[in-house]
Image 1: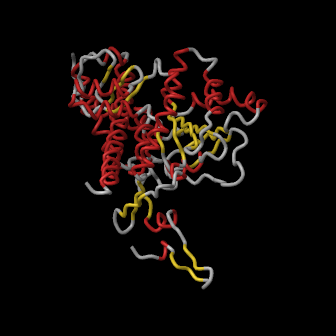
Image 2: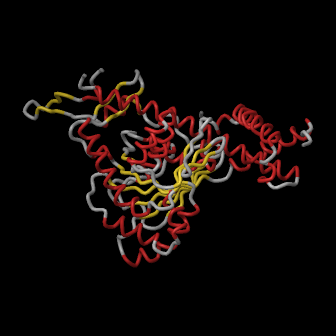
Image 3: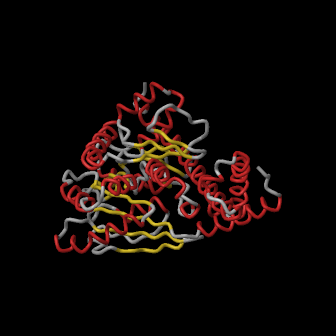
Amino acid sequence: MQALSQEQIERLKKEAIESFVKAANAPFIVAVIGQTGVGKSSLINALFNTNLKTDPVKPCTMAIEKVVVKGNQGELWFYDLPGIGESESADARYIEDYKQKLFEADVVLWCLHCDSRSVTFDVAALNKILVSFSAEKKAQLMSKITFVLTKADTLSHPAWILAKMDNTWGMFAPSKVTREILEKKAQYYQETFLLPYRHGIVSRTYNEGNFKIDDPRFSWDTYSIAFQGFMDEATLSQLKGKYPHYQEVFQRLYQNYQVVPCSSSFRFNLNKLMLVIVNKMGKEAIARFNNFLNDQLDKLPFAKAKEYSNLIVIDPNKNRKLFDLTETRI
Amino acid sequence: MSEFDDILQQIKQNNQEREQLKHAVKSANFDSIGEVIWKVAAKLLGEHISILKKRPFLRLIIEELVPIVYHFIRENWTLFFPY
């Protein structure tokens, strides 16, 4: 074969850069589904460094809302999809629009309130959305959706632990008991929402190079690895035992379809959630996504963290404050 | 064993996830740049990508070009690339 001339290589490079910049300026589209008050806007703000309005009392979103956030380069389009199940007539109006927006989106987050035990509305909503699709479309959509358990901080007993990382930053972690409760809840939600639609799902992650195994469920190229099917715990442990040097790859593929418990205010598990999002997007996570990537996903200013975990103790007889964490030097 | 072992483990895991996230973002960018270069090469050489991918020499050139283009864009548009 004839080698490329230097001129051809230079032209290739120039056109590639131009095409890349053009693609990077395309909007980055995030669709978020969930019942009223589940914390959709807060989650987007925490993940993508945006400033969407949030209202703790009255529902902010009564219809499908598109919010355009201007980044330094390009735009983020945020579709706030109101919870289905609040009224039958509203559902009928929403459902077609829902389907369209879900396929249009680069990322789909389905938010469930961590402290709610009722999943009836959400299960019905998922079924309503998927019912008219072919098996292939169902799998395609389910491969795109990430289920998130929001407001993990509402499980506040036993106390969360605040680690002082340095003079500026703090990081919240749940107590062992709370962590175990969160894991059990995540497993329950996974069984409820994902397992019924597990057939045909594809899980993807990045390739650090040299990945090569003899298993027809896997395919790979220079930068990514795909696993055809739903990786459950038994498959994970089997693969880890057989190919111990690829443990991290299997773990990431397994993690892609875990339900992720997180807290926007405590910034808990946001790295994990973002990793799942990027893994699922693969090459679609082109530069336009980087534009909205928050470098401090997992930490928050220590002073702010003290406010969140504060307990103010007063002596009503003497009309004075006995304790206020924000005023305490640590 | 201390009462904070579980928390220290969580912090360690979180740090690992942050590193994995950086790898994932960089790899996704390499992947997307590779895709763009293949498309441009197909346009320049007037052949389908699937046919071009069978040429080992071209594969090699494109694999070499990907990090060059990545670093060029990164140096010139730092806002795109936090990692």
